[in-house]
Amino acid sequence: MTFTREQVEDFLYLEADLMDQWKLIEWSELFAENGQYLVPPIGYPDADPNSTLFLIADDRFRLIEQAKRLMKRTAHVEYPHSTTRHMISNVRIEKITDGVAQVKCNFVAYRTKRQVLDVCRPY
Image 1 (tube, rainbow, N blue to C red):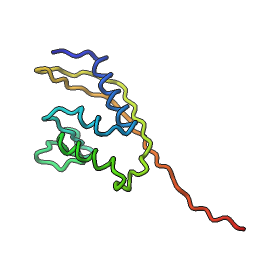
Image 2: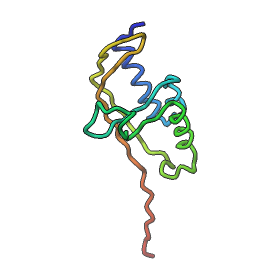
Image 3: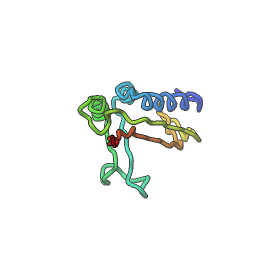
Image 4: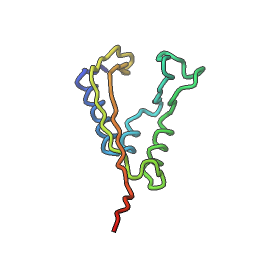
């Protein structure tokens, strides 16, 4: 199976859109059964997750469980939900092996929180 850059971009744009709309369950279900979500330590992009402490090292099950938790009102840090915007650029397919594409891209994620201010007004 081969992929075009346009197909890869469409997938990445879908993923970003699901996160920005807080459709986290749908987002987490995009991952393959044996997929991993890995964020290496800063300064060590080629670190081995089996021997190095990663910032994030989740499998599909953990991603889905975390998405479920964040959607609950009891997840106080995200209630009300943040507003996020994910932007993706410079999408490149590095190689395709046995139907699996290795892709690199640049992205930026913006997150803002609504502030609730208690203002006392003089009478």
